[in-house]
Length: 299
Image (cartoon, one colour):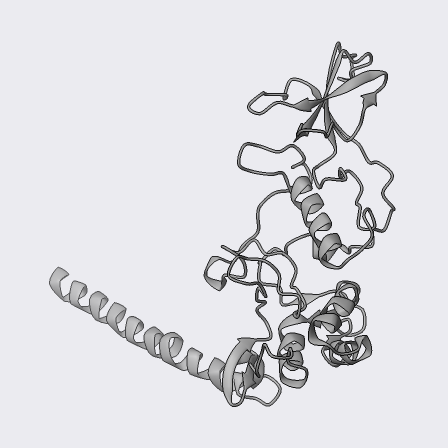
């Protein structure tokens, strides 16, 4: 009797396995695939591929780096926002730096998020030919480091150093002929950081400086997306790059702007998200319509 019950229970389990395998392993995937073939959904389900002469060359949903073999930006291309995915826009290593707003002090071999943002802002300023300081950001030194001090001295009940005895610019080691970004803080001379010295015992004080509230270099030019694969940039960042791209391709700025406008999207449903420009699509059209003289061909 027990053996017969065992057989029945196993047979019932086997039938359930077969039915669920057919329904969930075959039927459901086929149903989802059929839904994905509906006009308007098919392009997205296939990966929103961008083709050139009938060959897929990119996806409108995944960004790319437009740099040379040394990793330097190519001037004839619009640059994407920074990427924390692998070596940059690696779809197999999608992810962010996992550094947050509290990351303001550099560690050995690991610059803080603040210093990364500051360094990127200086790099964009130089690449786009802006006047020195035009891209300056709050809490950044002119050299592209986080403007952060470690203040030493007796603390009051709130943990604040009321009367500093020593002040160190923790992210800024001294180099020949250059001192710290601030000469003194509350009457105390500011020192440069010394490699390998620990300043965590001091009160960490970020210095805002005189940077404008809205810097010329937009936020998406200096911060990476959560996925590291964002294919879009803001219209402000695209506009900042127009003159450089026009010079490199030997065309007018208005011709470049026309291509940008053709690949600019507004807010989803008119109120979700922000306006955006697809960098990959813009660069592909520029290569097709306005190749660099003596340099680049289509694709």
